[in-house]
Image 1: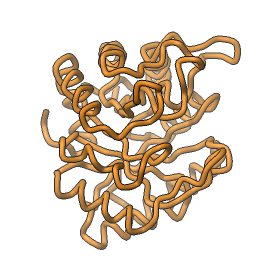
Image 2 (image 1 turned 90 degrees about the vertical axis):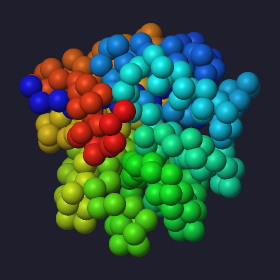
Image 3 (image 1 turned 90 degrees about the horizontal axis):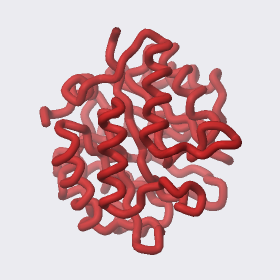
Length: 276
């Protein structure tokens, strides 16, 4: 069975504990939730941090606390910081990159979200990409629109990013790219044309989470993404019991497609990352 990277997005910037009480918001909670997910098969953790009132934070001290705890309790797990902009000042979005996580998310263009415009101007994108390069942080390119693939190509051509980025298509955000299987094929074909050496996955938001996993695995993707950031439920009527349950579902989908969770070392090899 060929390995696949299981990424768990543990917190995000939108859900609150009032939406699902298992959402981990403090560093201690995030470390514990990540450890459970790691034991269940996750090899990559995508991290957002929160202020005491649960609002999104860019505080490097919070990122560092989670990073150190995950490194201690989840040996070799890939640590990926978010540089996303929802609820965060643009000037602070890259403030944690000097901590040198293995990876960081990077959006290469702006897009409509349900209640805001998610702004990623060209100058900000270049600044974040340059900082990732300076600190030896591998980017995960977040694709919310077809043009964002070409935005990633421009970064490669400018020398701000290597030719083998990891690409994630985000499907199902209201007002952005719908969760449509045909659209995934279009995005994947364009990525293979523009970024032929890229690894790839896709994230399905809300009720599309498991469906998008199946689409990815049917196309032999390099990994799947799950977690409470994208989806707080298992069914319409039942909340997820935590990130661990969502990872367990992802592992089941892998098995149904003849795949298995990658070990941390395998995940690093698949994504072209330095050893732990």
